[in-house]
Every structure is written in C-alpha cells, then in structure tokens.
Length: 121
Image 1: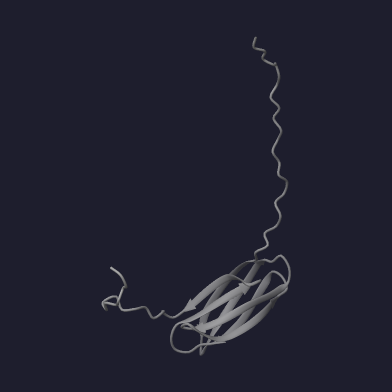
Image 2: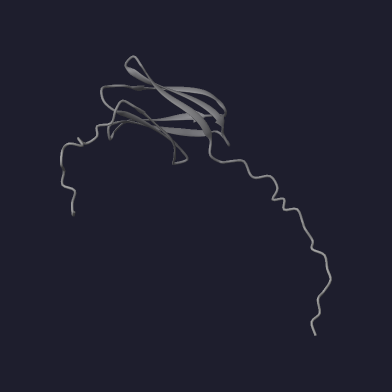
C-alpha cells in the first residue's frame, strides 16, 4: 500500500539581512603633469576607517620614491612627485593590496619588427 501524506509546502522568505559594508575603499585618482612634477589628485568616496595609503613612484621599472598619505575619511587629497623624461607609474596600496595604478608617458615596448629568440618553436 502506498500512503501519501497530505501537507502544505511552507515557503519562508529568504532574508539574509543587510550585507556588511565593503572593506575596500572607493577612490577616484588622477595623475597629471604640472611643470616638472606630477600631481596626484585623489577623491576618497568611501573609507572603512582611517589609515595610510602607500604610494610607490616608478620610472620605468625603477622605484624612485615611496610616500605614505594618511587618509582620515572621505574627501580630497593631493600629493606631488618629481617628473623626468620617460615612462612613470604610480601604484597606490591600501593594507598591502594594490588599489590603483596610474601611468604618465609611454612604456618602452620591444620593437615588433625585431625578431627575438622565442624559445622552443
């Protein structure tokens, strides 16, 4: 004999609750040449708490300068870096994690016409 139980399906609303706020800051960064310097304009939109934004300034692959900018909360911040000839790159790190990378100039890329040893073919 086969017995089928009569019952109702119960639907419970799946409400996970409010998500925690994001830990990663939200910033809008711009790097512009200004005379013999490069000016970083930084607008912080969201910040979980105060802390240091570590800035690493490179020319090509060579690290030229490191700075730490203390961010207290949302707002506008500026910093300047020496600008010479060639390709420059600014990397912003928050808590040891890259937050942004900005470039000025053109990177030196290998000549596509030049045949290089490509290894095994």
